[in-house]
Length: 454
Ligand SMILES: Cc1cc2nc3c(=O)[nH]c(=O)nc-3n(C[C@H](O)[C@H](O)[C@H](O)COP(=O)(O)OP(=O)(O)OC[C@H]3O[C@@H](n4cnc5c(N)ncnc54)[C@H](O)[C@@H]3O)c2cc1C
Image (cartoon, rainbow, N blue to C red; front, side, top):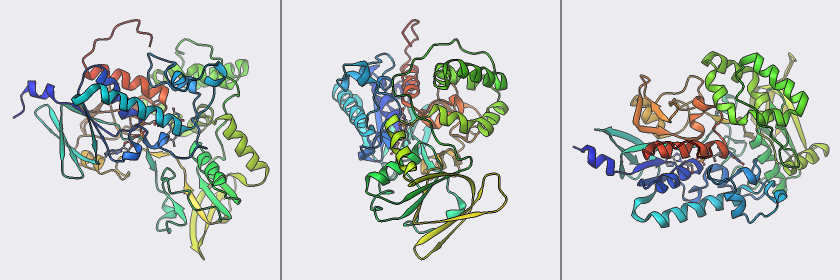
């Protein structure tokens, strides 16, 4: 049996070594806490899906000035880039460059930590718990003993569209983040992208950069698309945490937008978004997700200006078009696929025949549906449950995972986008770096010191 003292000597096991897991490991090591970081893809270690891309046309959607890995050192990334002028710091650099930054940070932390840090190159498949300790079981039959396990699994590929079930992989790419999804497609004449967010923009640019000279049709329910960042740096006028809710809050943001521009009005909310989300009831949150989310997403998650300009050029040349409609069916014939959809506001259906379809409908949050053995195991064992909105794992404000009965667990935690149900705004670097900073302090039993500049 494990004694309380032996449990305290065990490391924290972090499942997933992408951005969130890596940053949590670095922060824990800074506090002298032992860490075992488990990552199944050595190519993605420290980089994860977003920054593990090898394509230089994939740019950060956040300015360099706001991409420091550390909330207590805002200029860290800008210094790493050797950017001297404010103009340079406002640039949107390739995501693969950011991946190198993260890899370098991890290597430096490992070198300093010596035996306190371990990297395990394997898929974690299940976690069991005994007497205050936990054991993470790996696909290679090995196991990691730990005092707590933290799930840092990242974003799951989009939910499958039943209409594409059974289609040949040459005709349908279910996971747009799979590196091979856009390879070898230069000779195609027309493709369809389902979903019109930032990943759809990635796919369009990658096709174009690979020599594809055909047409891209982007289909989404409303035909909306992300707006662009302003060319020059943001001028954010801080506002106090707005105490309004629901429709009143929306009216106030509209009023501010008319006064100072929509970018300023949305950016000023950023420090308060998590509080605003938490202040709303689950019913009000659900109403936001149903009615406002698409509009929030296109104003909040913006394209780098150069990316927006390239897409606009494709559109002007008739090589990119956006359609609003609802998917109805898909039929494969003669090596192509005919997709039928109901145009928004119309009764009939329309069809388009393409060589390949990409599912870019946004990350899936349905724990029972995603293809992740570790989640299936934890669900079946009653150790996790989905949040009320089906956005990810149900956690408390500290990141402790709630079991099937709703009880928080000290030995099972989660960070990053899978905790969206609790905080909503916890998908991008500026929010996750604060989340992992706080979680590391909590796990290290560090007491909060006021006025730390956060
Ligand atoms: C395509 C894309 C582009 C983005 N661009 C930006 C951007 O420009 N700026 C920004 O601020 N945010 C961006 N984001 C948001 C992104 O969510 C965060 O920035 C951040 O990368 C999320 O980190 P994460 O560690 O939670 O997930 P990831 O970085 O994806 O890491 C999860 C890791 O867990 C591993 N893993 C999963 N399951 C297991 C298991 N069972 N065992 C072992 N390992 C496992 C995976 O292999 C993966 O490496 C982007 C997101 C995506 C998807």
